[in-house]
Image (cartoon, rainbow, N blue to C red; front, side, top):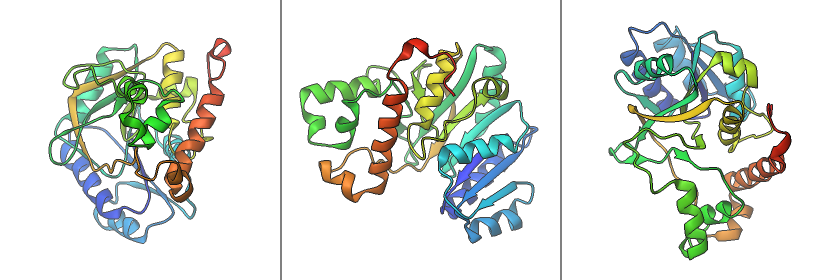
Amino acid sequence: SIIIVHHQTPELLKLCLKSIRETSADLDYEVVVIDSTISRKARDIINERHPEVRYLPFKENLGYARGVNTGIKNSTGKYILILNPDVIVTENAIQKMIAYMDRHLDIGMLGPRVLNFNGTHQKTYFSYYKPITIPARRSRLLGKIKLFKRALDDFLLTDTDPSQLQTPDWIMGSALMVRREIVNQIGGMDERFFMYFEDVDWARRFWHNDYKVVYYPEAVMYHYHQRESSSKLGILDAIFNKKTRWHISSAIKFFWKYRDLRNIVNTR
């Protein structure tokens, strides 16, 4: 089951769906598109070009976690591939991910190698956030100070080789595959996170339930991703940038949720 949460990027969605169709002819698969804040153009693209896609429109912005969970509840596949609508699937990428998870039953979450459209590597696997990570990512000035730079390097796992298999703390939710049987066990994404940190939290729950989170570079996808992690505005960015406010709000919820790890087994 391929789950796509779409929000006002119909042209990118069109390319995403085209890439899935062209690279997955030998797969038994379904695609579910959750259209968060209805896009007439996205609806028309699906109706005219991809009638096989299950299209679930919503008038309001559901948030990413709720959108993903809605897609999971309306799908049936053994494996669930979650994609952003601005991701392009390459030949055999999905097939390689399924085959690898079939061979390694201890893996609960698998992420492909993701490239920018110019062919450069895009960072998608990380260590867990610490409170110091937030200002280090959000302020270019602080990011140059030794203490914050070290924290940022630790978070970004800069000493790892992205061409090699990794077992990071978490993988960015733009492209990841999970097992339905494990999702049924530990639950879907935590809908308290409207946007940001839902992927961090989900991966942490996989690890806490003894399922590996793995970065698998043999499968490759492309992602049109505009980096928003740092700002020249510094603290003012939290006032003027809505997404920054979402990021900080989700960070606070995440740190509060995991304030005491002693009692955490299943953290739905």
